[in-house]
Length: 331
Image 1 (cartoon, rainbow, N blue to C red):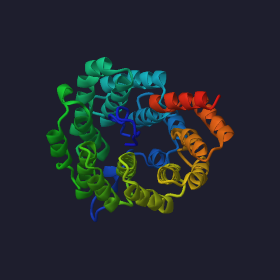
Image 2 (cartoon, rainbow, N blue to C red; image 1 turned 180 degrees about the horizontal axis):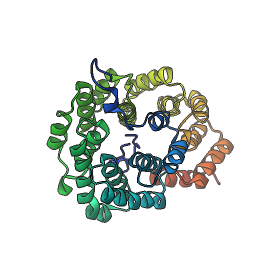
Image 3 (cartoon, rainbow, N blue to C red; image 1 turned 135 degrees about the horizontal axis):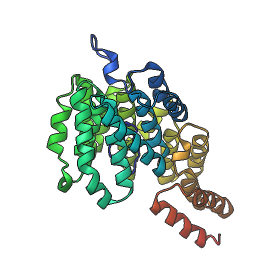
Image 4 (cartoon, helix red, strand yellow; image 1 turned 30 degrees about the horizontal axis):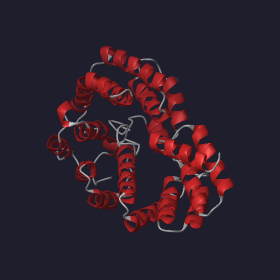
């Protein structure tokens, strides 16, 4: 499941080939065409393909659900929740229907605050558990249940012990290792989690590959935020070689350089990141503005902060800081 670095939104976003093991077990979709779109992160095309399928097609619903999660659009998520509820009623044995309902409802409720999350959490849990019970070899369902127990507060039913129990019941050792690393990540064991996830790469199967990459990314940024620049830099440089199309790697390296006294070099990497996949999800202009400030380039800093504030996509803390910096710069 592709996840955000935000502490709340990763909740239930569903978002390794072993000799003799069927590859399809760790694919997100049973349909190869849909799975290829998902693996390539072509979410607009995935949504379009899902909509072209019959209304009762569970794989089509799953496609629309994952695309809606990536779009971060409340009304669109609600529409998918309504469709998933109908799918569950008409096809109670379709794991994809239960998974889509649990995943999208969990994220949608989390965005609306703790009260909404608390009122919805039982339905989320039941939906994800039902998906796993119906298809115990489907990695995506197991991963979502593990994330549920790892991320949900204990007072709402979360449990590290339960998360590990479900992780260790996975049918393949690489799945268990990835899920154990996810629990370690949640427990703040960032280096151990990153080491375990890197050791699994590259991963061929779509659902597991998405999780391993997202969790390794989260661990690397966590280390960066804790000031462990050398460890984070190693990971970002590795990803730049392995996945040159991924914007987060040069962006992460740019942050490392900026925070270790090389703002001019950081700007080069920020600029490179703007041209790559996933750039729109990153606060590149915010970080570029800080780097320009460090270099004494007030006009360039103002322009970067204005772009960031106008886009309105960053975290609340970053947006507030950018506005304060603009005031200081006379912007």
